[in-house]
Image (cartoon, rainbow, N blue to C red; front, side, top):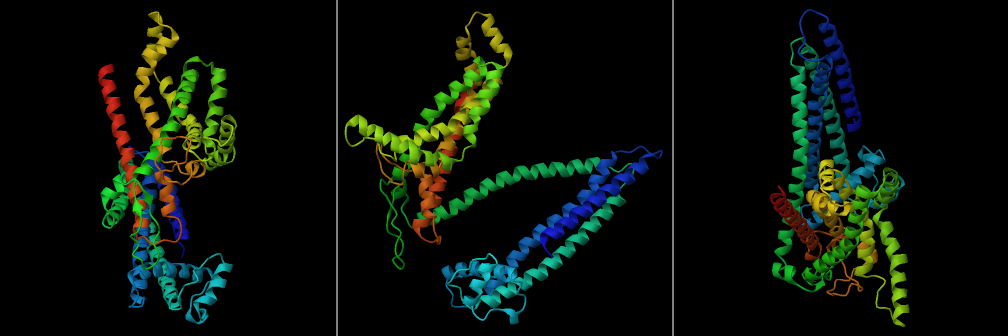
Length: 485
């Protein structure tokens, strides 16, 4: 029994419980006893009792089933398999089980004789298998499917029984003085708390996962060489060589990240902020209704399109223009910091403009009228009243824009290249941390070498940089508010 079918049955039971509970509450409301809650609350309480426990059980059962399947596979693997081969075999057996399930092979007699015979059959049903699979994986995958089928039916049946029991309990609780409203609101409060907790737990999980892999990386590479190294040359090692060759200097990548982000901010901030001031203070409602949507259309363009534009159009144009001006070899490369920063700045203009415009228009009208009433001009009002009042929001907008610039990848790959170098010339190629993270994690890799684990160290570095930017922006906002208030 598929999880989707079980979930649909549970929801259907909940809907029926809602309808019956509401009708029963309406019928009891016609009596002399005064009802504590509206009929809809009684229906929702019956719905929640029917669905929430059953769905939670399904989630726990699914996690337990996955753990059982992993243990089942591990118990049947050959004893002489290594740790690295074990993780690879687990993934291949899981893929093989998917192929057998898609082919509807449920008994040993229908199994292919060899793994090689299964590969073309699996490709016909849209499952691609690795050619290095072993024959011993076939019976293991079949046993995994059998266990999954049994556990799925058992778990689905228990979940449906729980849904029916919850619906019965909910309907039996429909009484005029039953506090169904309090129960429903309590459940919703816990749901909201859980949603907030998921966001926090996700952030903590991301940090812990990166931190654990980063510590593994630093156990093989000296942190001083990483944070203060000026050469980036990881050099993926050949098999059997230990994988410790290469230099992992962060400085060229960090310099390229900050340099390209700075150029993009120099383009996006003045244009975006001035356009926000114009639309918020000078433009008529008719002009604003046209200009603002058109400007925000830039935010809907995929970053790969900006990257293609930079690589195909802007980069060659700047190179040819510089060659024509210099009378020979151009001083601007097709892939350069300036090209990537300029295109990225254009992409970020709507972000700065939209956020700043919302902040500026939120400034109370009384502050504008007071300044103009004292004889200040409109430009003086903007400079001395509106912008100081909107400064906290503008700082937040600039912080969000800077974080977006630091995390950009596709534009940098196509417009700035992948060369990790140190240079102050904005017309030469550089690269960023995000590009190298993609490079180090591209391909069929195992997370047991410094060349791969360095991606987690780079990701954690980006996280720390973003956190530092948030702390700095918070300090600026608080300092300003103390002076202004």
